[in-house]
Amino acid sequence: MAVIEGGTSGALQEVGAAAAIAAHITTKPIPHGALGHYRVAVRVGLIAAQAANSRLFELRNTAANIIVVTKLTLKWLQTAAHTAAILDSLDIFRLTGFTAVDTTNTVTPTPSVKRTAGMAASPGGAAIRHVTVAGAAAGMTGGTLTKDATAFSQMNQFLLLAVPTAGVVVPIYYEVIDPNTLVHPFVFAQNEGFEIENRVLLGAAAGSDLIVELEFCEATAF
Image 1 (cartoon, rainbow, N blue to C red):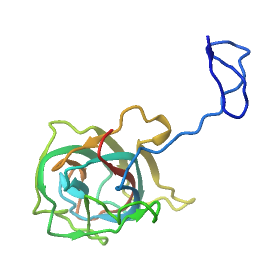
Image 2 (spheres, rainbow, N blue to C red):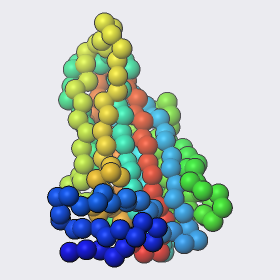
Image 3 (cartoon, rainbow, N blue to C red):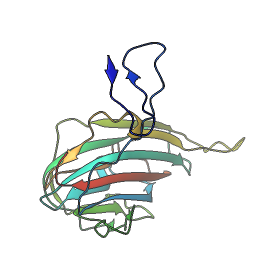
């Protein structure tokens, strides 16, 4: 079967033929209309006595438009010795009934808009919060939200009694949502979103840094 035709090449593109002419494909961004695409990166601390299920990062859709998460990457680096070696996890939950973001132990980052001309100012309809940079044992509190019964992604790390010193300590890197393999991203309606939380209670001595890199789009349809 042939596909008619390139406006510049005039060649026919064979579909399914082993010796077909190579296709030139350009991936287009999600149409945003008068809305926009945004990106933000933040660093926060997990500290001594970090509480179980304490919230570290969250995004809420405040508007009638939809928010599409196109990339979410976590980097987790142990920075201090722990009271005892422990298996911890960062769990990511979809949220509904998310009518208010947290108000205690929070910082409001400012995402970068990916194009000034033609895109709405940052952050569009997204309300983003992360825990205080230096860390807060209780995490962020004060919000109104309902978590799904089960996390949609988990990042595990075995935190050590002592930080290795024989070489460079590198962060554990985890692509929660990768744009290169995007089939159907999370699409959040008004008063929906997601959060990242610490799973288990950490000991009297503990310390690590979490870096969150997020890309999202606000659109009218997807």
